[in-house]
Structures are given as C-alpha cells and as structure tokens.
Length: 114
Length: 114
Image (cartoon, rainbow over all chains, first blue to last red; front, side, top):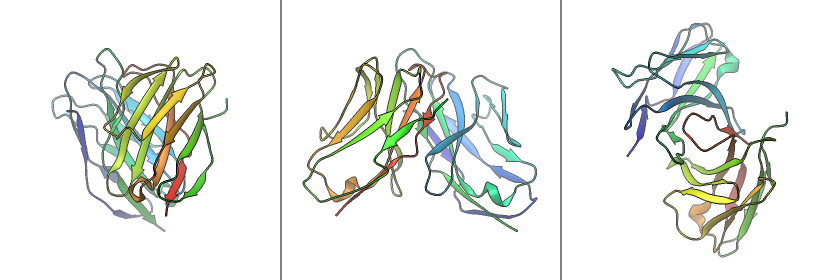
C-alpha cells in the first residue's frame, strides 16, 4: 500500500538556521503531496501542497518540490524562527478515482532555540 | 470563513462506556474524514463520509462508527471503550473525495479512557 517515510526527529536548530526535513513516498500512480504542521495542543494545519511532478509548493517561507524521479518531497526553509517550533507531517493522497484518505508519515518534531 | 469545529475538545470516559464526537465542516465542504492520532501509531484514517454516505473506511474494529447528516455535519461513535482508544481524534473536511482536494483539519477532540 501507499506509505510515507520522513526523517526521525527531534530536530533542534538555532534561530535563522537552514531547515531540511526529508520525506519520501511509495505510491502507485502520481499522488498529491502535502506538508502539514501541528502546533502544541492544536490540530493539523495545511502548510503547502504539490499535485504533480516538478510542482513547488510554498508558504510562509517553507518550500517543497515534488520529485517524481526520487519519489521525494523534502521540506525546506532558509531561516527558521522560534515560532516554527512544531511537529511537521508529510502526507500523500492518491489521485486514482474513488475516495482516498491522506496517508501520513510519523511526523518530525522541530525545536528552534533563540 | 469559519474553520472546522469539533466538540467537545476534551473528554474523559471510563472503560466500557461509549462516546460520541461531533464535527462541523467548513461551509460548502461535503466530505468529512476522521483520523485517530496516538504517539505509538501516529495518524491513522478511520473513515470518510460524503453526501451522508460512508465512502471509505480504515482498518478499525466495528466499535468505531460514524455518520453524516444532510448539513454535512458528522459524528463518530466509539462503543465499549478500551484504554487503547485514548487518542486525539481529528476531523477534516474537503470539497470532495478525490486526491486533489485539500483536507482542512479541526483542533481535535482529546479522548482519555480510564
């Protein structure tokens, strides 16, 4: 079945450091790919998405590019802030006909220290 | 536009009891999905409803059930609660059920079973 693998956390960075969170997927066909973020005590917020190969999703300084050849969707940010501390989830949703749920990775906890 | 709302936010129940959780989707969204989040298993899909019909179901026992009303509001029910049902239950809404549709999450209901 479809699956998502993301790097184990936790990740601890100093403010203004560069962030990369790796995400690879296994799926039949060409799924839509998403990054969600979860702040403490809250639900998931959609951070960005990409629906086809070579698409780049971006939001709030975060970026991720849909790489079909490497089945990857790594999350990057050039300069993290303390307010970016949260758990980040990579997810896919198959685009075949019918009803397809989100399939999530295990999540990566990011802590940014001042 | 108001986001996804879930009630109650917190719930404490005793083993053997049953519980009903409620979700109101974003206005205009007709699809509602439910996910269970636990530290051990991560985010797991429970079921999805569209136009009052269950369209997809995850790998959970029959104690977990749900329904959707004509106004797209959804409820999920867990009967004969077990300690392992303690989790954050997240509801997500989207315009439709296909893979290109983004899912927007509510804040979740934190269920504790004692």
